[in-house]
Length: 507
Image 1: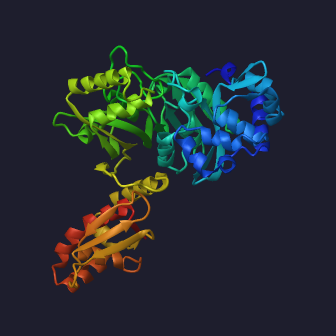
Image 2: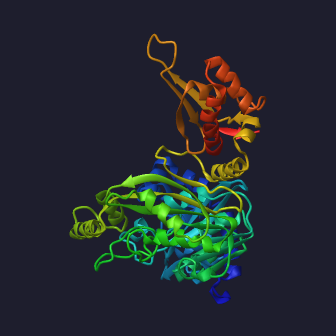
Image 3: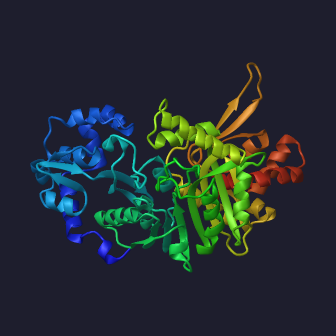
């Protein structure tokens, strides 16, 4: 993106000053219209919020109506709400259109809270008008604001420092902004010039340098370069390639089936530095008798470089449910002729490839460190997860690296400590002294619940960092009157799993 495409620095600074003076933050906006209206707004229902603001003419209320809800305001009100920038400046930045005394928004500009290892703060994020503000379907070139998927990926981002980060398919730039908190240099790419302009504006508005935008698809804009980290919320939605089915840039890259995610996985190794990581969201198809996660295994194997892979499937939909989800997302409503036609197109497309289900989840890839055993973990985790997973993922990778240099004898000589968020639940049949089920429950991370036997439960309960794991196992073997060597062979692999998943940490 050339310097001529960058937003006017003086106008952006004026806008930032006015937003700050108005107290235009996420908390202030929620307080202005209340919890019920806030919940309604999240569902695309703007009436309650507009009514809550109806009697107010202060700057916060005007900006909330104009830039959060996408409702027109008068020139006088906007000039009062943006005293430094003014209506003329807002128009020059492409935020509004002026028609007589009416100021109509051309974009949304919404406050967004942010919290990670670098601390808490807030951003202002500019994006295209949504369906509620437009009062109809989105144009195919629409640039999304901050939604559920983008927040999920932002929370997944590793929080450890990096030098260079690549954000592929940046959209409005939310992942690039998040990555900039951990790295001094971020390259953000997209096939949409409009998306790149939003990214540049959002970086400037939030006072962030070091974010460079480049136009192009996948890794073409950075050919020959390498990065410590790659993040991507790519347009992975599986869309039929037939006439009459709209192709939305924000969700559809023009690939057939799940080939976009396949291309990303098989190509990302070339832009990763040694031990560099890539994180993305994606879909994968279940075709005929082929498991979807096995398809992802094949993509990893096709990368041509040694890659660690930790793939977590969070959801699985049948073809009809998947088609309904994305047809509704495009603005078509059930019962309309176009809705039925689009659903049919999706189902025919899936049938042609014998697709029986579509998986959605998280992909964490890493260029395998030299001399380390490869990580190959493909799992389904369906339970709800509370909080950002980035710190947990980073801790798991560190644990894997530490475990990789410990053979079983060295692990037995190590001491371990049970994580503070781990609890134990025992289930007894009425009148029976011994439990029929013993569960270890994880409060953080993926919130895993593990059924364990008495020996492993006893080991975990005794892990306080005092005695070595092998000493504890020998004592448990004595207590249970079983062979100590056999118990070590049984428990040590499970200790490795508990360390990786965060139930235990090595002291």
